[in-house]
Length: 134
Image (tube, rainbow, N blue to C red):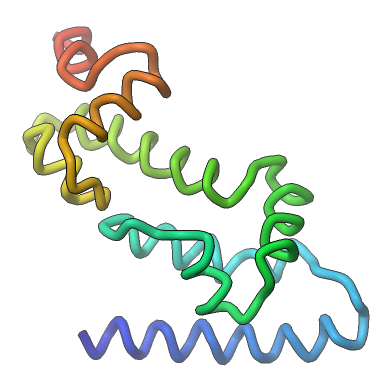
């Protein structure tokens, strides 16, 4: 718990330094997106919302959308889904986890919802993907 608190303080401190630069420039750079991407990577086990990202990083929804669109040509929600699905695929390849465990590790509280998202993303269900690896 204290590690999470420390991480948030560090991210907010870094964001505060960058916010002062942004005010003088009036622009958002790709460097300002880095702590947000890092936060997403480190919080895969949670259902991360755009509103949460805006609150943590003191940025408006439209600014956040613009940052992602300019740097990655994706919305924040698409980016989060992409990262989670790619991680799911890697975890399935390791054969060390059940589909339910992977869904839980990636912040999905419903196995059905996770399986549906996986199938929409990769064109096959997680169990079909595992069978294709054998």
